[in-house]
Image (cartoon, rainbow, N blue to C red):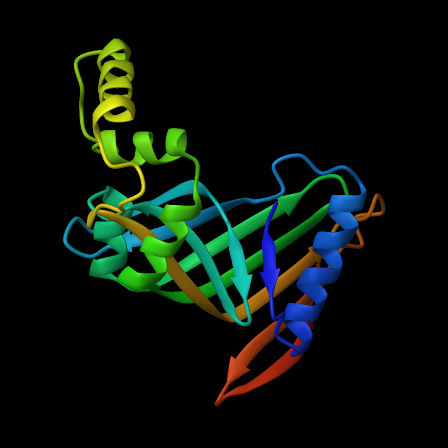
Length: 198
């Protein structure tokens, strides 16, 4: 699930919360899964991956990851991202464009301290996306961390990312294919609303 804190009162955020609640009530599985697409300027390459969105705090969307991962290097290279949510239980897709940045060390430490030791052991023991000899080695590294590491201290190579949208598209599918596509785009600090043809 996604934790909403001090939900922004502007229309696209209120509509997002409304659709989230509808999907949650409809029994949507993996409701916190969100696809993040980024561009790495050095490699001239676009990449996408799913992450677990943990918080929406006012106008910020927050998830956590390894700061030495490929996606982190992409975010450092080019701070503009695209995000995508699809909740099939209500046949709604939400497209987002945003700027991304790291959360503060203090924020990371507080969140890490409150997590389970099992989750923290994995965060500490994994060199995310780096090659390894076998899956058994992954498990050995995890068990070693679980026994030996300070599991309440957030390592410097792990933490949060926060992105603030400047564009939303709410796509609502219909059997007739007369799909509803509602756009919100922030222009000079003001959300402009429009519609797209299916």
